[in-house]
Image (cartoon, rainbow, N blue to C red; front, side, top):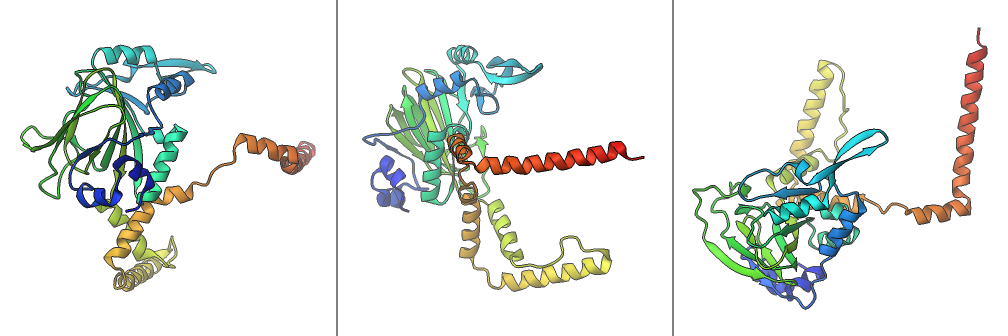
Amino acid sequence: MESPTLANWVGNVESFTSHQWQHEPAVFTPETLGSPFDLDELDSAFESGLLRTPYLEMVRSNKVTVPAEAYTTSRLLNGTTHHGFADRAKVVALLRAGATLLLRHVDQWHLPTADLVTRLSGELDRRVEAFFFVTPADCQGLATHRDDADVFALQVAGRKTWYVHGAPTTADWSLGELPDDEDSPQLLRSVLEPGHVLYIPRGFAHRAVGEAGLSAHLSLTIRDISLADLRTALQQCLTEGLTVPARPLGEAAIAEAAAALLGHARTKLATIEPRDLLLAAQTAQTRHLADAPRSQTFTETARDWESGTPRTKRAGLGSVVRTWRRLRDATDTAP
């Protein structure tokens, strides 16, 4: 595994992959953390006026649901009431009352975080997502739970005590909160301070409790391949190069398509190796990075507009308008 981004957090990547990666939790103290999201960025997000559900949520570890209207407000836009806009005063009041603020998929709406996620995803060939948690002192946002991802927690403010327990004992393990009757041994207890990085392997149960100050951390989840991913990849491999009509007409044509599909799949199956399936699944996980070309900025659009490119498009539009007018006039004069 070669990852300059990871090296900034864990130091020697080779040592990390040999000892900790998907094996045991660990805390690291890099010289510079460089988190793209912190409390200042959180304030900016609220002040933009665009932050809304489902990107923000307030949670409690006692299973009591915090209704969205308790931390959001409504706005009147063009005569229509729209709900779910973040209300900082309500959020702060709930934080003081012991709730935790959770921001989901920060990488989808915060450009510096998106850049970090894109870079890390490209280095690891895995899908990466970003979440941000703000927890008051002596409070816990989520009960002890398991995630279907390796997690890096970047502490950016305050102090937080983390408790990490063992891995699942069977392959058929469940996500989410640990059942009351499951006794998982505690492997790590550590107080994270600003600048610290905690690594939690996929499936290892964990919880976090706020300590001094308002505790905040950026959580980066690194998704690995699941059975569902392998099934999708297998379907893709088996149908690659298949030239059967998408909508055969009649029973005979449908039977012929079924026979062609089975024959093609049997031939392909004999050539597919496990590594081919893994590669197809990994490619599908990170395809969005290649399939999402950078869109033209408004500044670039304005520059092109000045160069005359859009004027050609406007001429084309004018031609369409003139054609529509001729058709309208012809319809109006028809007997």
